[in-house]
Amino acid sequence: MIKNTIIFSFTLIVISLLWNLFVPENIKSPATPYVVIYFFVSTIVTHHLLMKTNKQSPQNFIRAYLGTTALRLFLNLMIIVMYMLINRMGAMVFALSFLVLYFLYLIFEIISLQKDLKEK
Image (cartoon, rainbow, N blue to C red):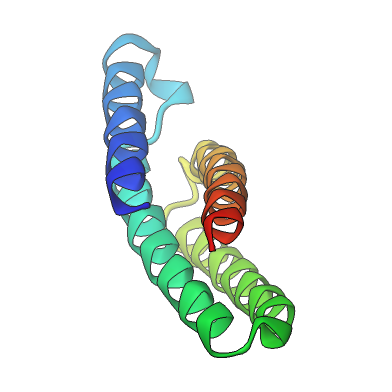
């Protein structure tokens, strides 16, 4: 899981850096590579906690998954709002790139969890 997450995150960082090099100023966010690092760390931590919960009690896995997903969604919304309050000029571009990365990592995490749960 960690190896795949590193590869996935590295690919997204390269894409975001290339995006920032070749697109006009009004549709790029310099914070995107840092957002990828944030999602990398949160995905690794969440995956580890969910797999640990599944080992202890598979019945609690669903509750833990829903709880961590709700907590992360709330935290992500807070990050977007704080960024929008601090940097009003690039707020919409940041929010859009943040949400795209959120959904990409969400899909990646679901696929990874399915693979890991099928193996065990």
